[in-house]
Length: 110
Image (cartoon, rainbow, N blue to C red):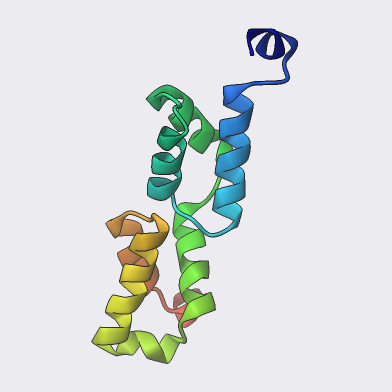
């Protein structure tokens, strides 16, 4: 394993960055990605660097996830709004980001 790492075939930083990009493109948030990377035995610094190199607008990604799954009229109903919020939290978005995405209306954009 050390020989492979020395030759550059096994690189934790490259794996972490690739994993973070893949999960973000699949619609997962930073909380979940952080947890999954930690589960792969990476230390906190490696995880944070991978998320930083991911260069994802988490708020925009959360809005996209809500718009794919819920109609704007659905979000007027408190029960459906709660489902949308729970969906985002399960996907790994923090509460502030999730609430902002659920409250967002496409017609709010100038």
